[in-house]
Length: 317
Image (cartoon, rainbow, N blue to C red; front, side):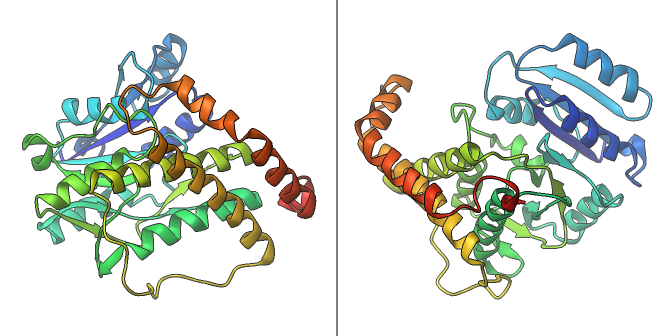
């Protein structure tokens, strides 16, 4: 088996089926790749639908972790996959390039020294302003991590592939990280062992974000929390020392204002991580932290949303 495609999923029927449909149309010979769909929790109806629609078209297996958290599914994928290359795709993505899997295979053959190879997301037509801004934030982070093209310090977890050999050496995703940051943790551990990550800017997958304003802020909070946790552990990857020429710094006033919201949530996440270093910190602690400054938070958020009418309504498209 040349490639194992690992797809963690939880309650995303439509987007998962869209991704599986795009895998059916890949040009790579169907005998050369397997697909592992990994549910967090059992879903007998969806499992049967996948078997009925795709059981003959592709070599597709459904597994269940029995636990919430994308990283339990990623970890299980690393244990069960048999391909020489493991490709990780998020369940809200679609392969609009029919040669995607063949290109991944070719890149790994061309770069035997690369332990991991990944690319960026693209957006489908009709995305909202919030989704476009989050995409821009993620793309800036990704492309500013390239330090000696094509080598990079970071890759995104929904468009990345690994050589089987690194899992055989005992590396895998940290399933204790329930939401967010596991790929960054994984990639830092690889680099600590002098293993290399390669970034290919043309190796795109289409990302259907369907992101609300709340989810936008939640992403910022969790990413800030993850960043500060790595800083406290002394394992945060060095920031780039020079601007990356791939970046496009021009932003509209509306985009800059939304980025202020994201940064506000990011800094809140960092503050949470500094305030709750104990392993015994719980969800209740997170709630207490949020409510301690609730009046300040509500006042600042209300002012931002009142000042910038582009956030709600049709202008956000």
